[in-house]
Image 1: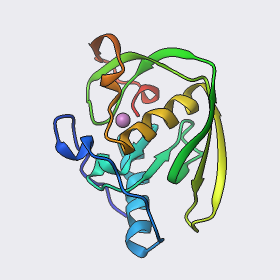
Image 2: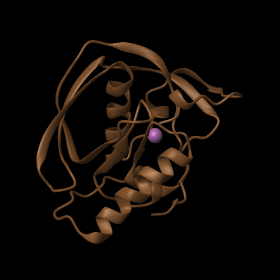
Image 3: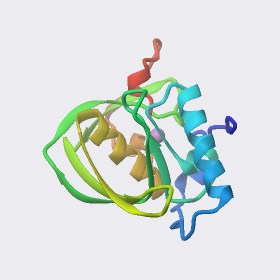
Length: 161
Ligand code: NI
């Protein structure tokens, strides 16, 4: 496994719609392992494949540091409620901004064996799921930010996704 280069805002790969994963291959497994390594190394709570330059519908999320979720071809089944909070992104270094997200989401996705499962999340996990899924359709949180983007001088683990 290896640390991959994180792409930053302004790079075209972050604006593209990602492709559905149709089969698990050694290459896809390696990508997912590298995404986890890259996320942890950057102290992020989530990472989407386009952030390492790969246009596949894969995200990894870990909001606690010990509970990684791997979501392949994820899709939101349900969402409800609302939360307003600060959000950041490893592809927009040194910045954060206020974004409103659902407070609860339920997603369906495929696991490493290409078996479907469901994941429910509230609060930070719900926010991370929404943020990462947006990446798969070429969207960054800065498009949704309310008010100005702020400079983050003291980067906290929890607000980098
Ligand atoms: Ni992001």
